[in-house]
Image (tube, rainbow, N blue to C red; front, side, top):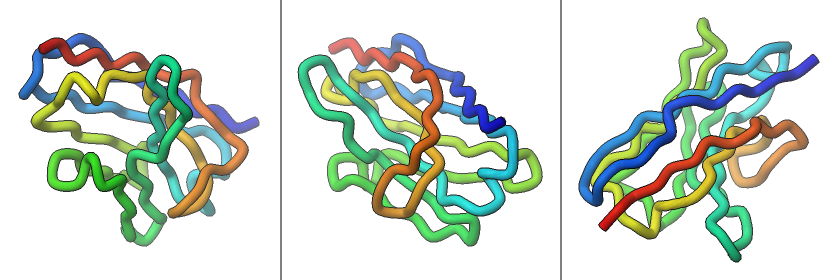
Length: 117
């Protein structure tokens, strides 16, 4: 059974930082790229960043230079370091096991990130 469990969301002021973690169970972590997606109220879910097992990355233009995705293959965990946060980064962030440029079928439950101005 595949499970993706996110943690690390919260409330932060603009300009601050947060680090999200996603722990994966099952074999999915060994074969898939891992990604972070977000969904703000009234908007579609969008790719934030993704990383392959070998370390290739893909970022949304809106977060390039501010967010960094990484993964620890020994711990089956993927991270999203978010710096210089902006109010427009406010959303529910979801972990996903999929492809470098698109989602797969496994999602975490989501973690809320709120950035106050």
